[in-house]
Image (cartoon, rainbow, N blue to C red; front, top):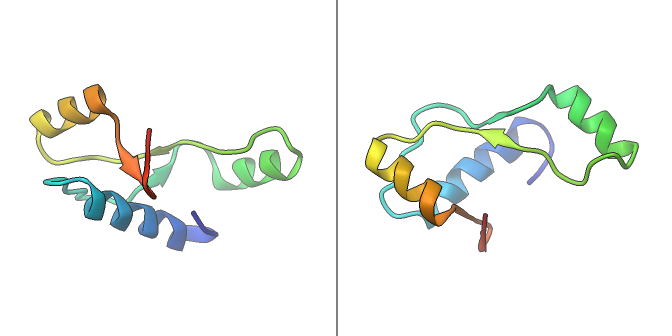
Length: 76
């Protein structure tokens, strides 16, 4: 979803726009080191990587775990 931290901010905005009631109080972060991710992608070892984020409310968290999460029009 973009280069640098702008892509992560866009991802956060996408989550908050597409999922009713979601609030992400902290930054979305890469699960691995961004340099490692970039190198692995350039070497063709990976096509995508995981991010981690916090949501407000255990009820919402459980719902996301059960139903998945929508980003950029796709369900994950």
